[in-house]
Length: 195
Image 1 (cartoon, rainbow, N blue to C red):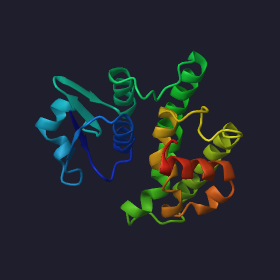
Image 2 (image 1 turned 135 degrees about the vertical axis):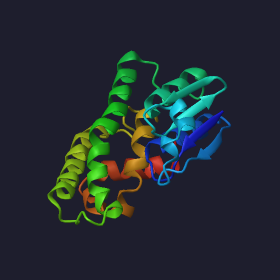
Image 3 (image 1 turned 60 degrees about the vertical axis):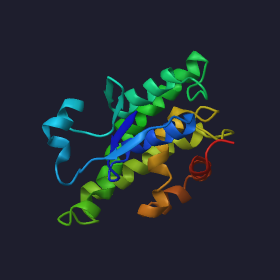
């Protein structure tokens, strides 16, 4: 099994977490994101959209982190990273999608000045990113009342959020975590992993 990834991309980190949680051996191949290897014909055969992560498992080639996480869960169901109960399983999947559909764009907007010197930290798009991140945590905070993790037990929902929320302090978002104590506690729990 091979995982193609790049350290600048958050989404492959989800797959790395799941692989480790499940104890699945996997060769990690860092692709040259800044140099354009993702647009090479060889890589485009793996993912025609030129994005990471890509997982190769023999003849099976899968791109998109959510699809890869679902594949790993079905390929090796133990330890389970999705609840057995259909309602909680659907909730976990909903949260998995929310992390990419709503949190990730705000995250990208907030980090833009670090990757593009033409974008100032006070740019309205950056400030909107900060606002959207705050609003997203406003949604998550009550879901964590009485729970260490998003759907009760540690799941792929937590795996999808972990690469983002565990680094808020490192990227200047301590103020947001300070206003969301349950999210902060959950972030700390995600750093250490399930008991």
